[in-house]
Image (cartoon, rainbow, N blue to C red; front, side, top):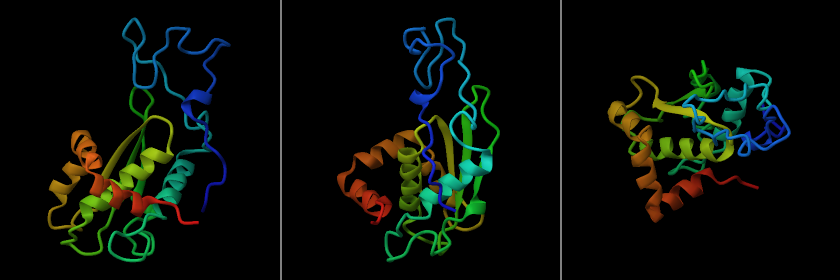
Length: 180
């Protein structure tokens, strides 16, 4: 199911008053207040979703269009990503939504599983504009080196380093670009 409704960005959410949040001393996303408290985050409904399933469907709609690095097919066509592999878990104490994405490489020794995981992460991060804790994992038992790959695709420093590589960045861009 494609989501045609535009989701609200964190900047578009009401802050409880007429003054901008910066003027009230509230932190930007990921910050704390002057007294060290973590401010409450908006709920799924305030972000424009009906419920957790709506967020799951929205994320799947983004992922289904990612192209396989080797084949002229999408990850959905190859059953690498699937709607049942997206889990919206309980928010963190600071009310940051937690999403786990599980994917299934086509073969247990897939040499591009790390690249596919990176594409999934980048696609979600670019299209979901609000705070989100994102965990990406290979389906248990689906890859020979799943533990090592899971560690790589969930390590912020490794992701940043990978995206600084111009060749790798171009591969990711080619896989995640939207076809007209």
